[in-house]
Image 1 (tube, rainbow, N blue to C red):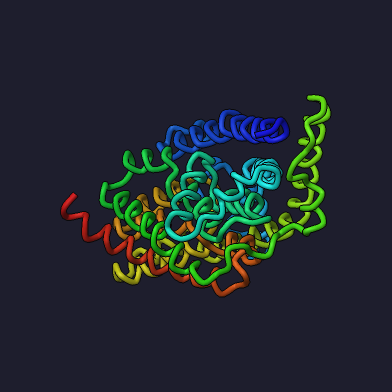
Image 2: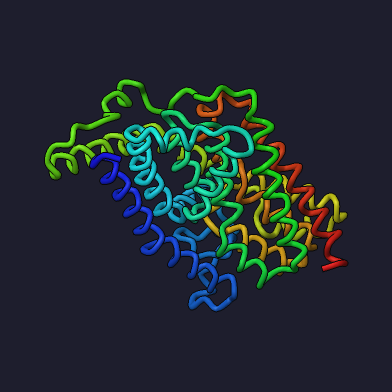
Length: 365
């Protein structure tokens, strides 16, 4: 590894460490406090049981409620998505300079999905932010399996989230979530990705890719640092231009779903037949795309409304998984809408399966 790659690796590690220590762990800790109903301002909690920057009132018209909800989701995701772009730019500049990293991300099948999920786990990002980082890092090459593995590994195997779930919900709920998360990553991703070519159409243009050196002559230390920072800035800016419009569209679509299914509607749904409830909650969760650990907040809402373990498990699996937001961001990487729609349909069906398994295990765990 030459000096440029060492410096780029250091930049990437520094951004990730700053994100985890300065934002992610603190954010997750505050959410856990709210989940445990120890928050200092519980009266400020909105429909999603978190502090809304723009409170949505029951009297707000549909359009206004959608705008407010979009803004709330954007504010809640702002730090994570900003760091996702920064980390993606740093990661992509390293991939373009260091062939060993690039080849690591090109593994196919179950191995590619598993390795991707291992990379995604320590990111502690929601699907929104994970998709930005994963698509960015894998935009020059990288397999579909590693791209999807990074996204779902970070969202479905957040260790802080899983530990918190065990303290709040029936073990049957958490075990079901883990089982179907493993099936999604290790079986579904390789199965649906097997007909895709190894290299997908890159998100950023080849002309910019060519501006990033695959080998930079080792001159002075300051020159090498300057070149590494220049690569990072160019790629971060280009990714932002490409992905920010898609992120805005995804946020608005997710807000529309949430406005159509406020808590009072959820309360009515809870009176239906148990199987129908699981199907409806799986559909709602699949359409949502939420900030990190918000699936637990939604799970506690359902728990407080008297929903069964099956419905709670369905929400815990589907809400953080592959959905509308991730579909919009990964469409180009995955060669069109066919594979994203298959993944969304699978998320919905697996949500139902998670719910049914949780109801079955409730009698035994």
